Length: 584
Image (cartoon, rainbow, N blue to C red; front, side, top):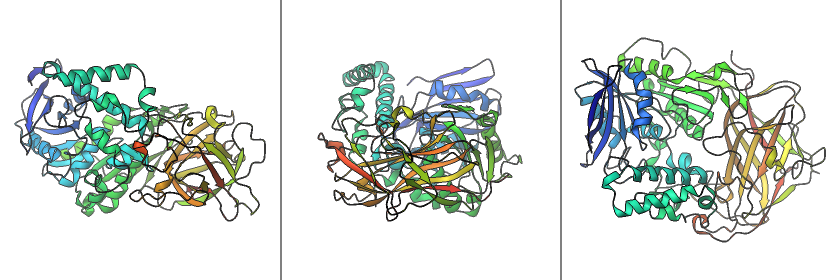
C-alpha cells in the first residue's frame, strides 16, 4: 500500500495509508489529517469499513483548524487494511482488539499529545461502543452518532424479523466497494465477484430482495469476504453467537464519557437509547455514569456535520437544525483539552419535542415520571372505506360485545414498505392503508404529548404456526395525511424469548407485545391518532412464510388468517407514555 504526505493550502498535513500493526501481526491502514504547525495534538479517531478520502476528508479540516489531529482507519479486511472482514468481530474485546490497539497507536505517535477520542457514527458508532469496555489507557471520550452496540438487535434483526432491505443491500454495496479497492492486486476471484455484484446492483433491488429462500443471494455467495453475512442469517435466534458483539453485557466495564447523538427517525434509534440508558445507570464508576450525555433530534440517518430541520413530509423549524460539529467540538475540548467550557453543566438529555418544535432538557431517558396510558383498539364507528376495518381508538376500555377484526396475510403479496433505510421520516401512509387494519381516534380537543417508549399489546390469533405482527402509530393531520410517527415488528415465534422460539398453536389466542421505539411527539388539537396493524412490511423486513420452518431456508409459503381481538376480556391496546407536565 503506497503512503503519501501532502500539505494543503490551509496548512493541513495529510498522510495516507499509514501502517497500524495490531496484536496478531495484521497491518491496518489509516489516513492522518493534522495541523502543519509543529507540536503535539489531541487525536480524534474514526474506525470504519468505508472509503476514507470522501468520508473523513469531508469533516477533518474543521477539527484540524481547532488543533486536533484526525485519524481515519479502515477496519480489518476492508480497503487497504489486511485480514478477513467480519463486521465488529475484531473491534471489541475478543482475541483481537483492533480498536484498543489503534487507540494506543494513535496516542504514541510523534504528533499526538496522548489524548485520544473517537467520533462519527453508523458503522463507526458501533466501533466506538465496542471498544469502550476494553478501556484503552489513552481513550478520553467518545461520541457515537446514530448507532448501536448490539449487532443482533440493531443491525440484523428487530423483533426476530430480519432487517432485509438494509442488511442485504448494505452488504452488496459495501462488499463491492471493498472489491473495487483491490485494484491491480485483485485476484481472478475478486474480479469475478466484483463484476457479479455490479451486474446484480444494476438490475435494481427487487431480484435480490424478493428471492427465496432468504439465504440465497448468488452475487454475495461468490464474493470473498461475504461469508459472515450468511453466517448471520443462519443465526436468527439471539444467543452465544451474538453476545461477543453486544455492549449490554459489558456496561459495567465502561469508564469513558460519551456524547450519544440520536435521531427520532434513525435506523439505529433503539440501540442508541438502549446504550445511553445502560451506561447512565450501569457504567463502571459514578463519574462515568455522570459523564453520559444524549441529544435526540428529529433527524433521519446520516447528518454527520449539520442536522437538518426537515425530515420526510414535515418541517420541524429552525430549532431542529443543529451544528453537530460544534456540539462535538465542545465535548472534545472539555475531555481532550481540559477546557472548562460547561460541557457537563446542562442536563444529561436534550430531546426535541416534535409538534411543539422545541427542545426538552431532561435528567434521563425515558423522562422521569413518565406513565403509560392504554389507548384501546375499538370497533369502528363509520364505514371501512379506506382500510380493512375502519376501527376506532379510545382511552375508554371496550365492552364485552366487540367483534374481532381479521385479515389474510399472503407472503407472496406482502404489504409494501413506504419506509426504507435511511428514509424512515414521517411519510403519508394512506397509499397502503387499504391493505391494513386501522384504528383511528376522534379529533383531539387539546394537544397530546407522547414522550417515551411506545408499545402495543395485541390479543391475537393466527391460523398458522408462525406469523408476524407489525404495528405503526400515525398522526392524522386535518388535511387527511396519515404521517408515520413510530412502528415495530414481532415475529410471533419469539413472543416470549428471542433465544427460544416457540410455534403458535393455530387458532389459539396469545398476547403479543410489540415495541414501537421511542418518540417525543405532540399530537396537536385538531389532529387524530391512528394505529396500523398488519403482518408484513416488505422489503424493510423479510417476509414470514407462515410455515413455522426455519425462515432462512424456507421456499414454501402459506396464507395465514390473522385475527385481532379488542373486547373486555382481550383488550388490545397501545401504551402511550405521557408526562403529567412537560418540562420548561
